[in-house]
Length: 627
Ligand SMILES: Cc1cc2nc3c(=O)[nH]c(=O)nc-3n(C[C@H](O)[C@H](O)[C@H](O)COP(=O)(O)OP(=O)(O)OC[C@H]3O[C@@H](n4cnc5c(N)ncnc54)[C@H](O)[C@@H]3O)c2cc1C
Image (cartoon, rainbow, N blue to C red; front, side, top):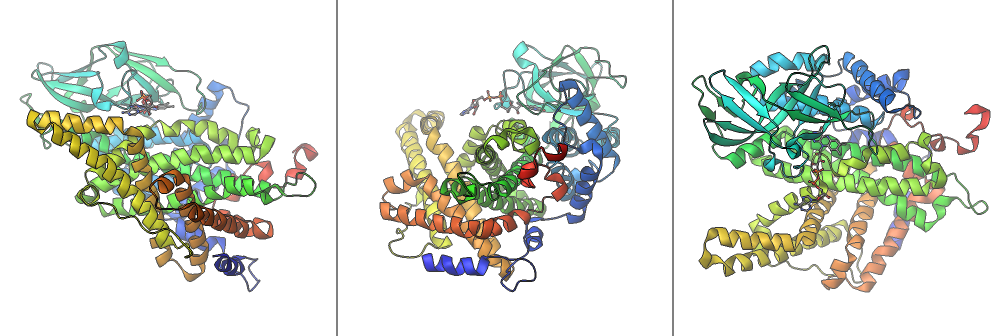
């Protein structure tokens, strides 16, 4: 292994363009990473880099920050980079435009996401032509500011349990929307505290005395003069831990009457005779379709987290490779520093490429892909945001006190984004959904997992790392699945409901393992996906990608060393071999002032004007000449 690494090191010690040793240029990597809409992304970057309205300003108060965020969104919208109609027409373009805002400010990114994706996307997906005609142009020019009212004070993760009601009144052809209890008030609703005019309300529908499950209704909450509409009450939620450019609100509805056409009716409607009709007969499947529209939002949150890791690690690496401490020792030469920063680089690559594959699956628009899309979007969102939390904290610590200075970008990013583990699906709940899908996979449940051999004196190959991660996924699923089967069998004489309950009780009792299953699946998917990317990559990119993939795989396995040692799959000497290989990779990435690590960061393609942190330039000049 050591000699292989030495060869890799020689091969990879990238130099400037005109030196013969060079193996790749950052733009070669950028081409691989930017899946689509390269020119559009560059146009958005140029716009937000050059217009002074988008410059960092950490001195604003709450109301000023909100106003600035609104103005930024208005000006961005006026550039017509995309249309809300692209949500259905050209989803890659839609996502590319919104993703590109991330490097400017997370509040702007989320305010745009709530308006265009959650509100606009819901209308595109769940509405029909009359809704598209009525709302989409006005969303596009921001004359109708949109929001998305799903969560209630009492119901966050359990959306099916919401209490807001929509009762159909055939005498007036209207729905009557009500908030029956305070816990049913819509809570956290982005964009409603101050600026919102329109909201997509999730409410339990009753027609002719029959409950039909949650449906979505378009409700005006403020008129064009910004007066709150009759029957609606709005409370501004005020300052938050971060993300203060977004005005979140709490909403109550008291006998708010909306016309029959206010219901988004692509899948269900009430006809002229007042009869409820739906192309999806079961309430639970209908509900799954209603919330299925959240996938795009979830992808944007995941991509935002990945991009934040890229920005954070780029800044931290640039600083760490020039910062001496204790004499002239550069802090990046400390093993602890390498171990804190370099895995973030690998995570960002692994997740970004996994997102690329997921977007390709989405492009196919095949009905049979619905489950895999749900599983991957849930799991990648959870992994990306959890690793982002960990990664940005590591970046901030690695920069010492400088990491705490707002101008250095990492701190504000970490606090503004802290909520991404919670919204668009709480991570713990999302990982359970990944695990539920694994538990439905007969291949994993019925065959006994076969443990791969350890490394012995053999080399550490990506195939072996993948086998180990695959084994972990299979073994955990088999363990929980077998217990569920046994529990269900023990209750089989009491009927199907009792057996299902017994199986569910096992899931509850094994919830920590269930979440670990979700992690195992996503880690294995990411590593396999990296391998597939490598197999198709240009020759010059193979070595650096393989190195990142090996780093990623080793870290995943070492994080679960208790599992692998406990299962007797790896020995202590295997773990030591993994550790020393990891250190070898760190040394290669950090050699020559971290040249390879810097090239890999440059490969992210973050526009230089948007890397504003002074420590990412020349920290020795900080404060000099009034800078
Ligand atoms: C800044 C911000 C903006 C938001 N914007 C919007 C918006 O625009 N529109 C909107 O509709 N909503 C919005 N939300 C709401 C958001 O989607 C919810 O906060 C989220 O779904 C979690 O719900 P909850 O807060 O009620 O937490 P809960 O669901 O009560 O969860 C609390 C804790 O319990 C745990 N938990 C819950 N259920 C389980 C379980 N089954 N197993 C194990 N653990 C569990 C969770 O992991 C979590 O740690 C926003 C939230 C925030 C903070």
